[in-house]
Amino acid sequence: MLFILACIILFHLAAAILLFVATIHNRWWVVTPAGRDVIYADLWYSCNSTCYPVENSHTADAAYLQAVQATMILATILSCVSFFVFILQLFRLQQGERFIFTSIIQLFASLCVMIAASIYTAQKTSFHVPSLQEGSYGSSYVLAWISFPMTFIGGLMYLVLRKRK
Image (tube, rainbow, N blue to C red; front, side, top):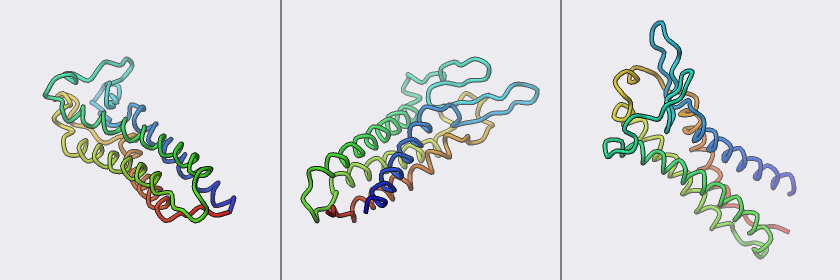
């Protein structure tokens, strides 16, 4: 039983780490212009040798980008909160009860990641300047999509999990 608990905790921590890296790291969009340095763009900055903020990220034109930023941050926070709620419920729940509250929070985190990655997929050209629109998805974008099923599976796992002795 202790082995299963350790695996669940490690799985949850791996999903949270993926969320942190996907949110913070600057590889959501990669542009390789001919004869120039590679440009990496994330949710806040575009970087080659120096970083500069995403143009017009504070205007109404970038509402999609702001939605992606907000939902990724919310997903990361919800995943961390659900981990602490799980630890609390380990000590508070009666034997045989389910981790419903932890599951709900984790499923909301999964929903936020899916919303953020979907919006980014659909609207990537609306918040990149024309010189950065010819590029490809980066590793942080892929990590966001990988963290979606991980948080979803974690939420379902908490839903069926019962506290045992």
